[in-house]
Each structure stands twice: as C-alpha cells, then as structure tokens.
Length: 132
Image (cartoon, rainbow, N blue to C red; front, top):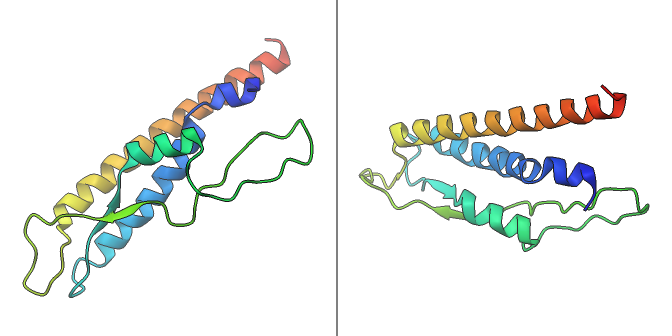
C-alpha cells in the first residue's frame, strides 16, 4: 500500500458511498407525493465494509503502470434496499418527508466531514512534498 493510499484510507470510498446515498435520499424526497413510490436507502456501514474488503462487484480498473493507485470502481447500483415504513400513506407511498430530510442532512454533514479529512491529508502531503 502506497503512502497516498494510506493517507486517504477510508475517506475516498466513504465519499463515493455518501454521494450515492445522497442521490437515493434526494430521489425519496423528490417522490414524496408520488403514489406507490417506495422509499429506498442503503446500509452505509455494510457497503463501506464491502468496498474496503473488495467485495463490491464493481468493475476493476486495469493498472497500466505500477505507479498508478490500485482503485476499484463502485458498482452502479449498490445494495439499495426498500425502507420499512413507519406510516405508509393510503396511496402506497412509503416516504416520510421528515425522516428523509433528517437522513439527507445527516448524510450531508458526514460527506462534508470526509471532505475535510481528505483536504487536511492533502494539505499535509503537499507540505511534506515541499519540505516544510
């Protein structure tokens, strides 16, 4: 494992998963009034463990040079599951807008946290390269 891979550790994978989860939660919010729409979500912790262990089922990128980082692309549709509704609507919609907004906000804060960690790691590497 290279210095750069160790520096970024889990945060690069977390950003990809948080981004995907934001899309799923945003779709739930957008379809809050759509009859028959079923709210979906993903188990972030389980997906992160899969990504870290290399079990994502995604497409592996070919390394054409030994200096390239070993990366694995995430599958286009990770294990997204239907959420069990607390109060399903009469029209079959299972989106609870308050729950979705709260989860979207929490996911956004966690995304920003990973960005902050990555930014500080990059700044640290930049200082190390410059010799400061």
